[in-house]
Length: 262
Image (cartoon, rainbow, N blue to C red; front, side, top):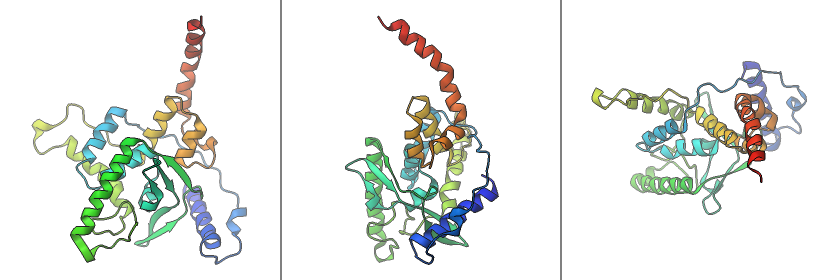
C-alpha cells in the first residue's frame, strides 16, 4: 500500500471515530474525499501447509502461541487480534467477533475501528476452540501468580503480557523471525533441520489461510468476509494468481464430471 493511500485510510478512520465514537464532529469531511487509486500487490512467498504446521509447532513453546494459531486459522490482522477481548470470543458457538484494531502512535496504544470500519464475525474450528481454552487457563494462572500487580481488566484482552498489560504490535511481528532462526540455526548443528523453514512474515499467515481456502473452492465472497475486505473485488485482485490457478483446472474438472456421469 502506498503512503498516500495509507494516509487516506488513517485519516478516514480517525475522522470516523471522531464522529461516531467521541462525537467531536457532526460529520466527517474525509468521507467525501476520493481515495487515491493504487495497485494491490499480490502476496509474496506463501508457506505450504506442512511448513505452516512446522511453524505452529515451534510456536507452541511460547506463551503467545495461541496468537499465531488464531492468526493462521482466522485470517485476522495483527491489530485486530491484539484488540480482541474475551467477551468477543464465543467458544460455545465457535466464533469470534472482530470489532476494532489496536496500534501504537508515539509510544501509546491507540484503539480504533477495523481497516474496513466494520465489525465481522469469524467462525473457528474445534481445535482452535481448544487452543483458546488452554490460553485462557494459562492467562488465569498468570493473573493468580502476579496478584495485585496484574495490569489487565476482568474480561479484558485475550492477548496480554505476562503482567496483563497490552502487547506492542512489534513484539508479535518480530517473534516469528526469532522462532524460525532458532529452528533453522540451532546451537547444536547436528539438530539442524534437513529442510530449513523459509522466512515469512506474520502477515503471511493471513495469506496462507486465504490461499488455502480459495484453492479448495471456498467462494470468494466468503473468503473476503473472513479477511475483512470491504469488497470481494479486493480479494479477487490481491489473490488473482490463486484464481488463475483454479481456473486452469476448471476445464479438466468439468470434463471429468461429464465423463463420470452415467
